[in-house]
Amino acid sequence: MNENQRLEGQQVKTGNPSDKKSEKDYSKYFETVFVPPSLKDAKKRGKEEVKYHDDFKISEEFRGMGDGRKFYIRTYGCQMNEHDTEVMAGIFMALGYEATDSVEDADVILLNTCAIRENAENKVFGELGHLKHLKTQKPDLLLGVCGCMSQEESVVNKILKTYTQVDIIFGTHNIHRLPNILKEAYMSKEMVVEVWSKEGDVIENLPKVRRGNIKGWVNIMYGCDKFCTYCIVPYTRGKERSRRPEEIIQEVRELAAHGYQEITLLGQNVNAYGKDFEDREYGLGDLMDEIRHIGIPRIRFTTSHPRDFDDYLIEVLAKGGNLMDHIHLPVQSGSTDVLKIMARKYTREQYLELVRKIKAAMPDVALTTDIIVGYPNETDEQFEETLSLYREVGFEAAYTFIYSPREGTPAAKMKDNVPMEVKKERLQRLNALVNELSAKALEKYKGQTVEVLVEGESKNNPDVLAGYTSKNKLVNFVGPKTAIGKIVKVKITDTKTWSLNGEMVEELQSVEVK
Ligand code: 5AD
Ligand code: SF4
Image (cartoon, rainbow, N blue to C red; front, side, top):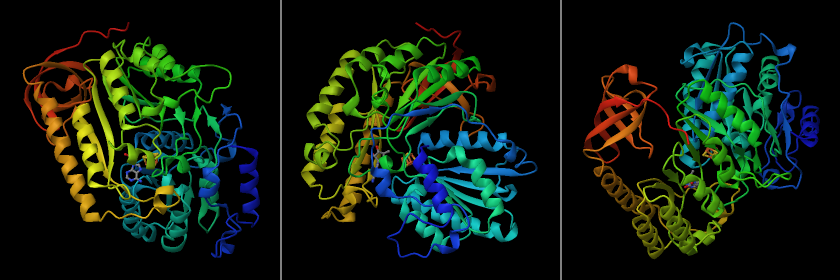
């Protein structure tokens, strides 16, 4: 948080909405907190140094606010959001609230939203519709919207106009303000809106209630400065800011001490980790090289941007051990021309060269990716280049998407001559290839014995256990429930398009940390 934002908040609170150009009449919100988002401000990147805060505490005035009350958070989107939910749950618990799995039982319901594609947003609007009746049954219920959608002007305007059952909207930079926001909401009859558009700081000591005790997420950086032309994330998540390595290492140590078996280092573009440090030369490679010495069996990271993936990181990853042999490396398109329009800042050839280097250092690595089809004006030839790149790399899995225009991004203003039918056909063709190569990659495991971190019962069959291999392959297998939370050896008996079946052979004795 910076002084400007504090002042902005106060100014607006006394009746001076920043959205002066808007025709909307916001006067009824003047008496309550009303800080709407601005994509224009969110786009700005200043040179200000990152400030670190470790003085978060629940002030006396909020203590006990949640006594006798229950909260429910529904999370949409990526792991970053999942982890934000863990932080919000931590704040709720510190306020005295109790968690509930049922919306009917809840006194506060939060939707932690994703803005990445239109269908993600539509799901949230649908859910707000479903939840409306609960407000009539329980007038004291607070219904809130947070996460990436709340950072968008268009969304906030739509909620103000159409979804008046909502009591609270707060942004991704306002999570630590949850106690204040809840208090405002209890006192106010109007919708409380607090969305800071710019964030330049890192807040360190927020409480967390982690989901599960097997796999843990650890934020290493926030925000993104890449501004790919299709992407809303640099607007919803702010500028790149890295957590200091000491704090990260301390958090990983604590997770290891609590018996966590796997950690995933999180960031929107983890390869830019450390680029904002003014006092040291320190990157993701350095961080991974330190963390691998901590006694935690599995270490992953997500998400990578090929442009910043450097040789030192490859060298460190090649050391193996508890650094997993799976890299998720979003390519988005196989056509240099499309990559240029996307502002990805690499060519097809440069991507292939990076893959060559990774495979040279880690011959057995599993590569997975993200791909967008039907970018504005994408030609058949350009799409074919995506298919050929997919085969050439030999990706083992992919998340594939039809391009979805996001208001405020440069691509949303581009004219587009590709009909939706064509986009859908391209997605189907790509998915057929993705399935084919996934099935092929999995076939190789038949008869082999793999190490599986057991997460619990299989979703479809409680008599079967499920977990993931180091390469992140889902394995369903027969074994004792005592294996849950452990890394065990499983012999693969059958392979499918997206998963492996097997039988447990033995439990691993110990973790080897080099
Ligand atoms: N439309 C479709 N897919 C998108 N992604 C990001 N923005 C968009 C968009 N506007 C995809 C990218 C990214 C993944 C998280 O979501 O492939 O890597
Ligand atoms: Fe969705 Fe991106 Fe926000 Fe994650 S950071 S929730 S993927 S918009």
